[in-house]
Amino acid sequence: MQMLKALLIALHEDETGVTATEYVSVLVLIACVGIVTVNTFGEAVSELYSEVHEGMSNGEVRGGLASED
Image (cartoon, rainbow, N blue to C red; front, top):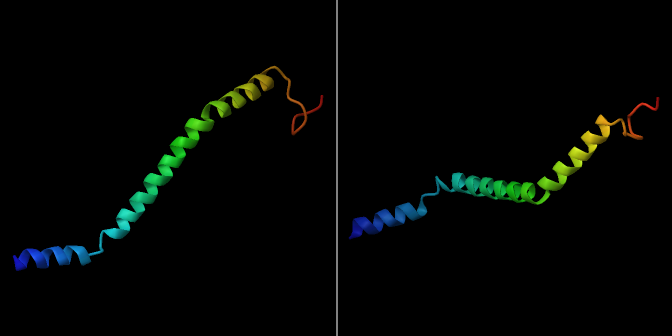
């Protein structure tokens, strides 16, 4: 019983894996934020790029860096 108690105390005081666990937690949080952001804004950004592409294909680009021929 003393050996089990000593083992549990040693495992409780061992902090070698804590840093890796913290990094994994931060990585998972960043991945979740990225997934939510893409799901929230992905369709709107895709539509915006499609409109810009269609406008450029039809020669309807105004202002900015487009030439004013």
